[in-house]
Image 1: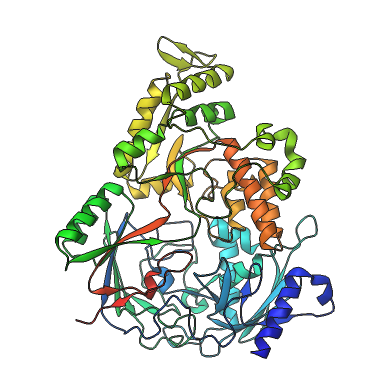
Image 2: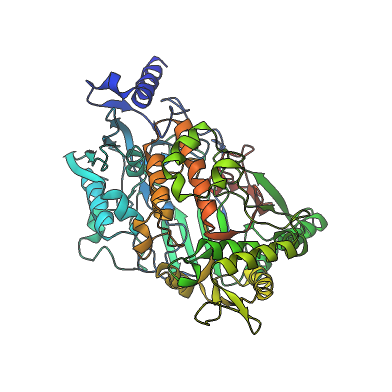
Length: 601
């Protein structure tokens, strides 16, 4: 306990007063938090949201809507199969009950520079690949170098921030980080390196790293790939010789002997498979299907249960995203007008039984969301960009256009028409056209046929102001290809945020990412103010600083009208058959499937 207190004190000083530790070269720790200190003590036994006595055995059958053509999830090519994180592990494990804290996994302990300019990982000597070979520092170095040079755009941008990587011995590797242009250090990078997937160097000895494959890989995780049926199913079997079964981060998890993912092209077919008990659990997102599952559950009380798990993470920001690389959407007045034309209240009431809340923030359902007037901390961050931002952002609470009792659709469409007129458009022969006489028409790209009803209603409303919106649904492979190439006018898609947003924000909104195909800057945002806020996020040394930067970023993004946001619930909806058991406690981030277990017959 004393050792833990001293370690916590050292990490607190590292965050709050790095100058006090200037003479200290490294701080040793059992875990690391983005802000503050880890909740769990060094001798903790397991996370509190698992059942440490959960029995092993049984099969869990889940579904995925889509397809796959590769079991290599860390490259741009191909569409990877679900579940590969059961096979590949990282150096550290993320807890689901803290905003961003990592605990030992492949690495049994770490040393961190006081200013976070470096991190050293000490690999657990017990760590083994599934073929029996030891996990070594050479594997870590290989993984870092390969992902930096040939991985996905996110990996490349992150791992290029490393100044040097040194293999100290078979079980120790040290990473030193580059300084930012202003001399600061990206304080999130030690944690990002801790989450880096580690791949076996010897597996790639005679084959290129950046090629897709369907050959079952060798990992270090709790499951092996047992069977691969491209586009149809993936079957994982628990490795009974798994080296890390007794690690605190693993106790009470990975309880099923077999996990099977069946792939479907349609959510309705997947639901039918569940109700026929071809699947054991299903996460539902559609209110109508959820109501039907609840009806069936109540009629057949011994069949399956429906549970709404309350969570406290930010909801995904999902909506019709405008590609500002296209001339139609380069003007913020046009994007705002298109936002006015979305009839939230009618769609929510008519199509979804009023089940949803309006997504009025990029970090909805969390304390990271902006609301009301900016506070002093936010104003300080926004002030340098005042000339580039709407005046109203500083003088009154910002609100996205929406329909409700006080904002009927007819008034919103009138406001939309006025904005379009300001932007140089006019109605000619019943169609909205620009100064060149070109009609305003665009395509809305979808991947799920279930989204067509929302898109078609939106298109019908746009037609009332002279805009033609064509709705096109494509299969999963084509959708992913077009998404990666930014080959769309508008796309119904999402961004996912955590309780501790960081470097991924530059991939979502950063100017540099806008021109990198495969990045997640789907809207093509290029804004110096946004870039500044994303830098402030990664430089934040306290939770308060992070919160202020995120709320400021939220206000800037909202005022840019880069998407028409849809809805959220604040709960995760699951239907689960009686042969599957779940822990009593739900962590901050929501239910953890890895903590479920089979109910003995």
